[in-house]
Length: 148
Figure 1 (tube, rainbow, N blue to C red):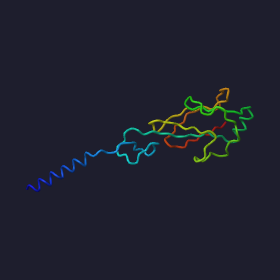
Figure 2 (tube, rainbow, N blue to C red; figure 1 turned 120 degrees about the horizontal axis):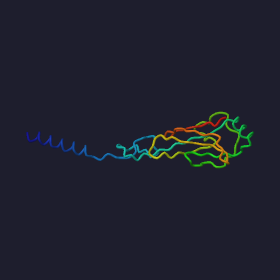
Figure 3 (cartoon, rainbow, N blue to C red; figure 1 turned 90 degrees about the vertical axis):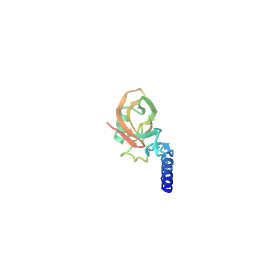
Figure 4 (cartoon, helix red, strand yellow; figure 1 turned 180 degrees about the vertical axis):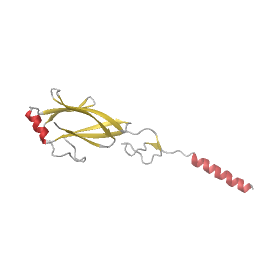
């Protein structure tokens, strides 16, 4: 009987010790830029980022040039990220995600895995040519074709 109580006490003690072990905390979302594969408990520290690319077909470049537009300004969420882009020839088709488009914008999304982005493309004199809204997801490749 004493031996049984000893075994039960030992089993209870080991169980309590095992259950009270600290689990490693950190970001448990693999889509986050600060993902910690060793973390067992999410501590809310996840941070996210994404990129989106603007591109245009050669016909859009021709229209721009025929209108006398040779430089563009790119704005996302009220921040100018390209202020004097020279209008080139464009791309015949949507670029691959591994290829950076004509204008790339990195979005720091903080602790949000998705974010809505308002964008605008203007002439240098601030005449709006294109504008819209897009939703970007963490580590995503988002491409926006600028066309007339």
